[in-house]
Length: 288
Image 1: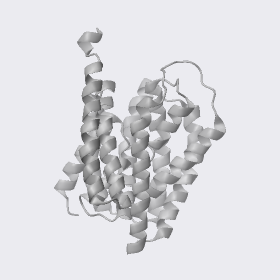
Image 2: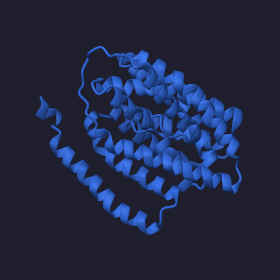
Image 3: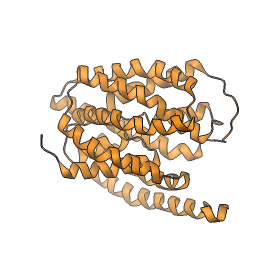
Image 4: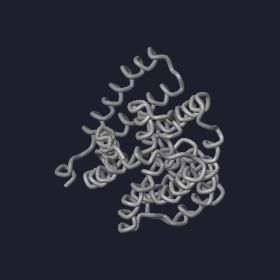
């Protein structure tokens, strides 16, 4: 099996960004595979899901030790997401691998990336106050969120770390930030496992690509998680969300002129938000 060192290094960059910021890997890894390495969208989605299943447990173990997972929320989310992920993977298989089918998958993936980017960009504006109060488990809304997120992940590999966390934030604006992240990460593990099982049963996985992704991303995710801080991850999210948005627009078929203008406008604006938030965030010495 040939080892693609360029793909390993690129996966390490994406993995480091995921570990550092908490942004969902599917929103970054899948576009990289398609746009930079010319891998067919359906193959990129299935290979990314298998690799993500290897990465997820490392992050979950950290939150297990910190006891920052709300298991009741995880349970009802998975009640909807696990079967929906299998359905999404089956739907991807039914679409086939012809040129027309790959074109359709690319459009669906683009729409998912645009929605995911919008969710990431609007997250700072969703009212959120950390609190340790007991939560009322809203069963039906949680199952519904799980169904929507699970189907999107099974079909496109995007959604576990971008869409579901926004819905969680909307349902529970007073859920403490560490419990929000821990709960979202914990529910994404069985969700990704179900989507991966679906791809193995219904789809085709390029194990050479998957191995390259794992070799590059797993150690980088661990390193990124160790170096991460709330302020730094928050500073980087606007830029990453902008890149995801531009990737999604390219998938949908947006004109090159629009993409160029968007890059010229959105990237400097995102950089401005980064600089502004960095100036307003106290350093460790200032806080102490």
